[in-house]
Image (cartoon, rainbow, N blue to C red; front, side, top):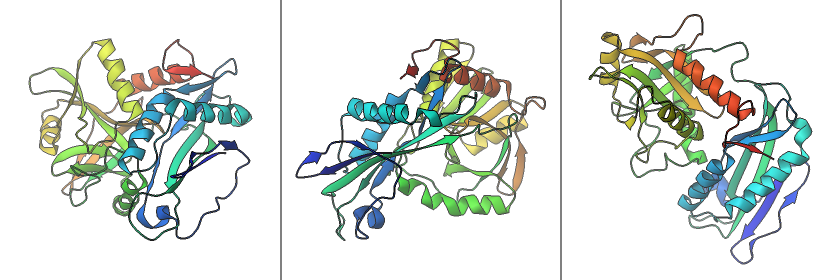
Length: 328
């Protein structure tokens, strides 16, 4: 693991890489009481030649920097921290699986460590990175998910921290997720009022024929309540380069979605994130009514979902030359 301490007095200390070990922290550390922490999630891959690759890692560093800034945690040199993480990955490269679909998950985290019971900027902090080999999200083809859309709960709100990757965004989502599971659904479709925001811990995409008859891929715009996902940005960039249909960041309401379903204009719907890349959606429950989302029964996903999965995997594993795949 990688560990770097910071203090208001001395700034960032020398990075250390050592065997995985428990952290030695005071029970009064600010992080335990006021949730002053942010984190990231990214992966390292081995291509067919055994070379190590990372997928757009600077996007994660950019987001971690903004999250730290929002929580008044110490900011850092993004390039230097990324170089430290790359060194850690190289040292532990034997843990990166060779098989396609498998990877090394990387979790950089920044926490406030000053031992004081009081809300305020922490005079001490710790950056650390841990890693673990992971397998494919879908082990034998796609497994479409079912969702509950329940506007009794909001994942984020204007002026809050929904656009930052902070721990406080995740713990409050566990109870609604458990409620969805007890009803037989996999995840929540998060709403703000009637507006779609995110799918579980993923960004949300709708592919439909809009009311003007145009084929359109639409995802909620970044209004401060949406996490600016790396996979989200990758999908928007790729589909805009394809120039095959309209690509929009905008407002999507449940009324619009239900109308599209009833008028047979909805083509497919999926979530997107680091863990799964893309995740097909087959059913949404809203106000006690189940709405079926179209999927290709052979693919267990929509055709666009499958194409995006194949395209991004090929980039991640270096099967095509692309600037997003960074060789270490």
